Image (cartoon, rainbow, N blue to C red; front, side):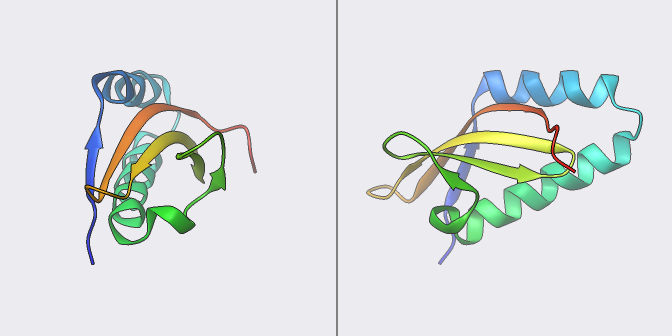
Length: 86
């Protein structure tokens, strides 16, 4: 079953900023695509649980904060940043 993934304007702006400042823009684009596919497949297993329905996922070199709405099978990507994880 596929979930709908919606990137909020804040997350889209975050991605643009990370991409523009990245030493490897291809890696950022590939990570964003992989994150999108992961969230479409199984967002409830992606990343780490936070408060309520909010989760944090890492897809190097990115970190994404997202909210899962099980009733509508929609994932809202709220924020995105460059990940400090290796």
